[in-house]
Image 1: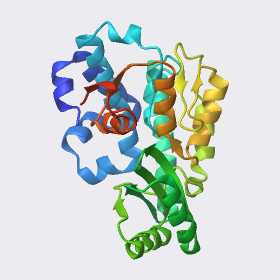
Image 2: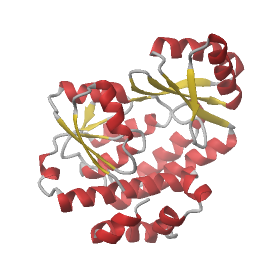
Image 3: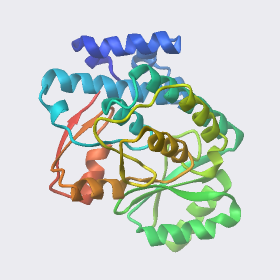
Length: 285
């Protein structure tokens, strides 16, 4: 991840250099050479994805210089909301990285404290997922964590509850459940007290009014006020990501063209499930 863009774009490489100085380890080396188990650890993967996404933004500035000034709103899925906030001017790069570092470390500790995970349910509607979750709660904590798009909902819970949900799905037949390669049950109460650690980290940086609206994962609504943004970021750690509502809100606001920056093309795929003809451009790293 990020090797090619850092070779071709000096501004992207500079971001990684600045990040490495703050983190006190060579982030680009971990992104390009691993080892995979270190890169996949939440406390490392969150800073890595954050910096790589902003490196992709530098590529947008180089290859499509007119685009940043034309953007009227921004959003990011879970961790991606921090990239959106930096682009919108609500957070500096360094302050954003400090908060993301603290967030990743706190969520990693919460995941280690309670063996847990996440599973994507593909092809099931929300009502069916809610029914599965309600029945699986007998085995432990389990909640819907991501409302991504029609037919794609992610559930987080303790390992025992996830296993029970998978068993129920097999018994009912025709339910496709896919485990996600994550450290724990993100966007549920299992992440407590990561929300408190994040609140402390946010209190140590400067949030300013965003120059364009940033759509929050918590309420699927646009925000520019720094106090509201900070409050919602803390809530986001324990709250489900309302991504489908966010996409529909952006479309209803009249936005016709979208740019996805960062690793992969997942967001474009989700948008196509919401609005098949959406105009989507990917800048990947």
